[in-house]
Length: 225
Image (cartoon, rainbow, N blue to C red; front, side, top):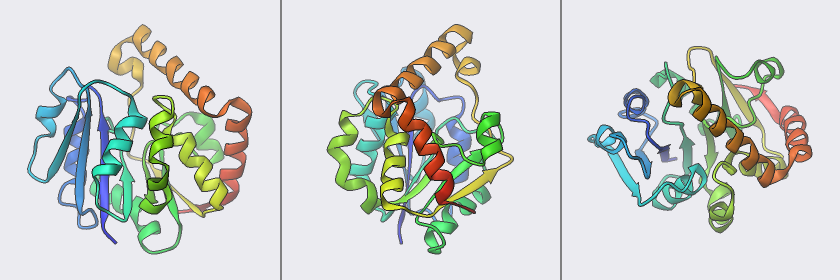
C-alpha cells in the first residue's frame, strides 16, 4: 500500500526541517506533503526540498482545514499525519508507527510521546495526539465534515470514526520524541491563549462528556504497538 505523509505547518520554520529529515527518503513513505497553513515566517522556504509536495494555504485556516486540503491532494491508500514541531523524531519512529497498519496488526496507530501529559502516559493513550496512521478510505468520505469542524477538531473527529468502526488501535510509545509546548514556541501568554483556544475547539467539536467517553472507549480498543 502506498503511504502519504501529511505535515500541516503554521510558522514552524525552526522545527519542520528535523521532521522532514525523518520522513524524506523513508522506505515506507511514498510521498511527503507539507501544507503551509498561511505561515508568516520561513516555513515554506525550509520545506521547499526535493521530494516534498508543498501546498500553500492563502491564509491560516487551522489544522483541520490544512489536513483536509492535504488529503485531497494526496494519493496514498494509507495516510500518515505528523505534526511539524516534533523534536527527536527519527525514521525508526516512523517505521514503528507505520508497521502495525501496513502489516494488518491494527487498523490504525497513534503515538504516545515522551512529554505527553502525565495522565496520558499513565493511562497509555494520548487521545489528541497529532501523529496517526489510518486508511484513506476511513477519512476521505468525510471531507465536507472536516472543513466544517473547528480549527483543532480533527483528532477528536477521527477518534469518533475509530470508535464507531471498533478498530484496533496500536499505541506506539515514542520515548525519544517530544512536542514543544505552545508557551515554549510563542511565549507564556500567547502559548496559554493558544492552548485555551485548542481546548475550546475540542469542546465545540464533541463536548467534555464525549471527550471522556472517547478516552474510555479508545483504551478498550488499543493494543501494544
